[in-house]
Image (cartoon, rainbow, N blue to C red; front, top):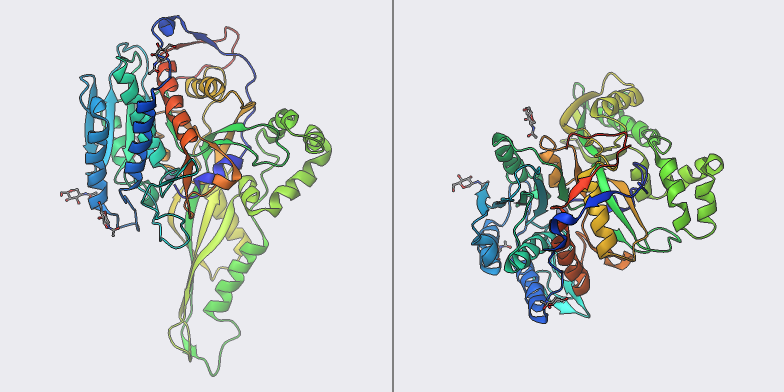
Length: 499
Ligand SMILES: *[C@@H]1O[C@H](CO)[C@@H](O)[C@H](O)[C@H]1NC(C)=O
Ligand SMILES: *[C@@H]1O[C@H](CO)[C@@H](O)[C@H](O)[C@H]1NC(C)=O
Ligand SMILES: *[C@@H]1O[C@H](CO)[C@@H](O)[C@H](O)[C@H]1NC(C)=O
Ligand SMILES: *[C@@H]1O[C@H](CO)[C@@H](O)[C@H](O)[C@H]1NC(C)=O
Ligand SMILES: [Zn+2]
């Protein structure tokens, strides 16, 4: 996913639930399968990921992807995960020619099903700058290198691997679930995720929750944060591609008018650059959340965060300085295309530009469009929305939010070093937005511990450590079993969700 990695720093949504959620563990305590794997199984797990990296399932552009590789990938997973494909209670379907939908039928139809998401396609990887060829899947110093090791074949393979290992141990689920593997996430997901979602909707499916890529367990990312923290993104920013256009009668450049299409359009863009969209730092429950996180930081940041009543303007300005943290607190405005001019001695009749907006969850497409018109404040500039979608609604994180609580519970069990699990917002976009009709609970979380040096998604030398990948498989192995537990609601819980 484009820019998914920025999710990790977006700690700006809700409060951290410190309350204890009760689980009815009786259901499976006797039959729980331990997540210990033999040496042979662990080797096969790593080899399977390497093989997946070696298939160059590249999405080149909005029209073009390597369909040969996508087809090969479909055959590959059948070969590597034979049990998944030959289990009577699992149905496999190919959707949109290259995407895959698995329906895993649970034994208890009263439990609402959930969905695990991942995507098969990757962004291109020119060889320049790579220590090993990007589609070699080579292992070096405990890391597997290659395009897709973090975005997102690790999830594709870990989900199927965990299921394969569970099935080999005669696991049968109680709660049904779906696995949806999209093949065009990097180029919008309209042939894959969108079609799978439409298919599920046509079958009347309602999901308890969905889990997709989009955030990580992060270590050392925020200044002076003492221990790793896990961020579960519970919302995605929206987006708008807006075309600005200026038309004038063409004239000769020897007697130019005072203003031309180019100068008018430039002035409009300059206005937008000089007047950024409002800072949303004070909105939502940012302050509460940062205050709750305060204890995780060392001095002096903990003091600043405990005293936001005093330091808010300072923190807010600090966040604006860095492009990544700035993107957390406001709608961003990026002019990406500018077109004008046909001949050196002709005043161009048309000048047009495209601006890419990423919309903060506290705003809507409509609000941002109106603000933009007010900032430009020039009738000669026309506005055409080329593509737009609102930010996704914020998924629940309270005691009754099954998906969030299952993730939190599993994170604490599999990553004992993690001190805090906090909700965040994703400033990129994922396939999950195509599933908004199916559930109110969409959680973006990749169970992989990342250090700043591993932050190489869409860049050169993308890699995952062998240990991190094994832990991801273990996490999903535990998560699937945890999903069979019943969440026993807090009797005095004020919120009830229609999950
Ligand atoms: C996992 O551990 C259990 C006991 O704790 C043992 O019986 C079993 O053989 C182990 N499985 C593997 C694959 O190592
Ligand atoms: C597409 O994938 C196939 C393998 O499935 C590979 O042989 C071929 O080189 C790839 N094409 C491009 C343009 O990358
Ligand atoms: C899927 O395959 C059919 C038949 O080969 C083709 O017409 C269609 O364009 C393909 N769709 C995609 C998304 O590649
Ligand atoms: C969601 O459901 C509405 C109403 O049924 C439908 O019009 C819309 O196309 C659906 N959206 C998606 C993304 O599936
Ligand atoms: Zn991705």
